Length: 260
Ligand SMILES: N[C@@H](CCC(=O)N[C@@H](CS)C(=O)NCC(=O)O)C(=O)O
Image: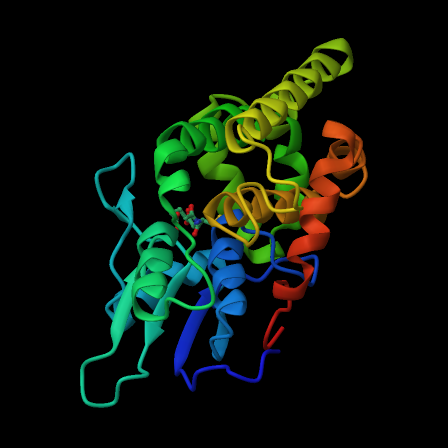
């Protein structure tokens, strides 16, 4: 890791998986940023079924509301106690966390230059709704299998209520499945068109250095690679002329996992 690493005291909360590697596309965003900025941190691994009690006990805010109306607690979260003369900064939700880290520790280069801000809304919509939400039906079983045994019933229960059917029944097969993968490939191409309007000539999507789109797409690529190494990742590496594989390789220096 870089020698100019600031002496930070950051606790980063992530979810353990059954695969021995973290997979959450939201926690990976934060990890990539912490590592890119060279910020020293300790990772605390919280099984999904313990997120709520952990967050409540530490004063970490919920990020949404459950269908029942109760608060919904999610990871990532961070507690930054670097400044000893002030209260620790306690944050949840990947975007506010990344924005805080960018404000507090701006080097080595801007994550949100104006070119990124211009496309950010369209980019977020395409990535979260058209790619990750749309693709969920393709990798739901793989996601279930990646969960810790103690987290599986909870995941299955919540997903099946949401889907109105079992995970097994929600899985699409045959030509329907192949069409869905094709559609996803086109959405990834759209993502590339959006980011590389001017062409960058580097492995990063929008310029000479890593910016927010690289982090957000990179975290999804890591999720797909770890969760569905054969089917999903086997396809993604062939898309856009190998563009996504090259992006992930460019992010490798910031993919190390502490305390795993
Ligand atoms: N908007 C949140 C979403 C985070 C999120 O959904 N995290 C999932 C893991 S990928 C989670 O903690 N789920 C726990 C639960 O739903 O109980 C963010 O960007 O951080």
